Length: 348
Image (cartoon, rainbow, N blue to C red):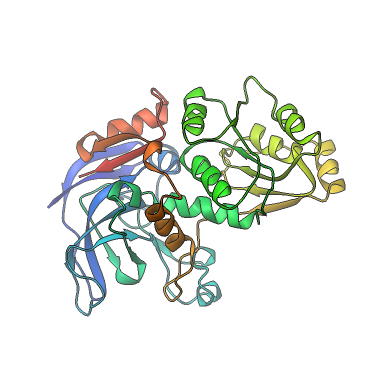
């Protein structure tokens, strides 16, 4: 048996003992080192539910291989790995080009199948990547959100010297900011409504940091760009005010990347739509990240390499590390926003 946080229904989370998952051919059993709590896990646990019950949530995790199945030759017990949680089935055209997140009918560890709020997870070896020796499992557990952030930046086609605005400084927003800096962006303007998150951004070395409750984003951007607007805006909060602000601050022929998943309908004023049309703004969606079985160049490998080289600094984002036995209280804290948090990690 193993320890896990099990979702039996909407808002019905239970800390309990469940059977250790069996290892099949071509699979390994990973002992979880750390599992991050994604912002999507909160509505999944308390509002929307999962695809079936009971489910063990948690899709951002890394750990150590504890057991290997028949036919596994490329990994051994004791290897440290990050796990791509999307389990594709190879029968969709998107899979032929490695765009697994664009396929249909896939499975997903942590939402459709059992995930990382537990001691062990079973995964196919093709979903694994080795963790570099100088990267901690705490950092490696954030590979998934860091890859999502990188994918958004790549979708935005950031160019050397571009002025960029980022709205929302949760963990992914702060990762986006670091990727922008690594990609050669010039001035990076960061917006949030919590001073604690702005302080984290400043400690990471960012200067143009604004509280949107006190400063209108349009005014801040105009002051920095002589009224021209930003080349690229990345919306990472998923709320109507920041989505509208992202469109407002983008210059002619600029680009807007929609990264934050909206929790409610967004109404865009007709005048703003007309402005976007006149400015010929590109609005780009982004979803998940690119992972490749056969290539050595994808979002996930880039993330692990950047962690190893120090390009990406993720430990400053961690505010909580809690054992599984205290995980439900941590999830409720995030739901209620009863304390400041950034990245919350759950561990056995």
